[in-house]
Length: 438
Image 1: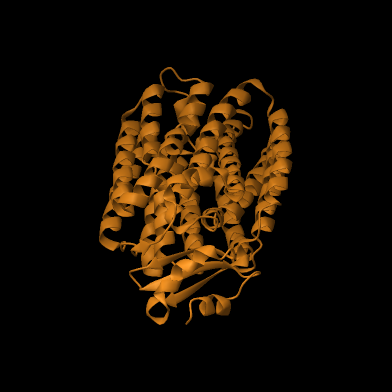
Image 2: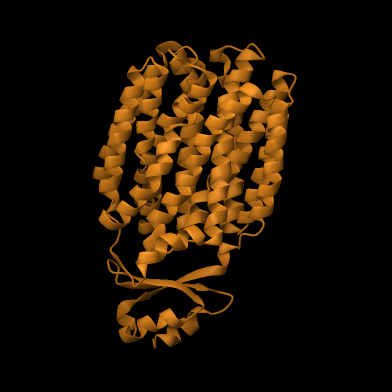
């Protein structure tokens, strides 16, 4: 598993590193661009998420039908073009164009779907945790490196670094990532898009991703502006905020992952993260000194990093094998919609509304969010059995369609294995095997 996941995780980490690298400083640098305004800066910060939102679903659907690798390569090439345009921009509108193209390379769902294809579901939490940890690590390094590199070499250097790292990602994909196994199944696939949009558990996960990413973007927009304008900090000093924030955030990931994926406490971990969001924004919005402001930022990063390792893994648990690319495409689209609106609405409200009022509304949203999360079922009640095809009566396989206690079944042709997902509270593995006349 590790040999498959590390290359894929590195691709995701390098891509997100490029996006994260500019987050701490883009709002400050963009102020000096031609035609710049707070509203346009908000768009520049979050607009890449708009095209991510638009293209996540098409990329996910294409990858389900035409293959993961080729789809990922196309997305990475588009991302490179967008990064180059950002690097040469000196006008806010050109910067926005480049950011839109960066977002159009919407491969996040495809990479996650490929991990789900390669790794068995029992190992998937660990695989997703590795990917989440790689993203969090890239996040931490980017938060420290971005302000330092840009202060010496300018913001264009950050986009040039992003383009180079993306080229390296394409090489890693071609050279080191294995092809996923060949899967066969019998589903009524013509209606699965509408089914996904109506699935109540997926709706809750989509809303969760939307809110989490929206709050993240808003936080990154206001943190450097408030520190520099209200507390008279210098750009080079931002590492004093991001360093402790990243360290505490990374430390929070381990316990969060163990509690959620080994102890089955998914809801509890999500709720704790949401509470930390509310506390952090209330602290940030009502701080009268930089010390309390930094404490609020640290609390925010702890909350964010308790969510990050488990979000994608939890979403995939509610998806059938033939829907993973599309499910994750929709899931990530909601996240990027949140990212876009977090920047856009953040720019509008921050310019016209006291920050103390904004964070109060955020706290109220968090309370409603917790109520929503409380209704999510525990995915640990679902189990999977793997059966060698040669040991069963093949004519009995399709009888599984009539068993209401079985969520799905499919055949892994590469490994000659029948894979069955079932509700452990209603049926056991022996009953399933007896039905297949083992």
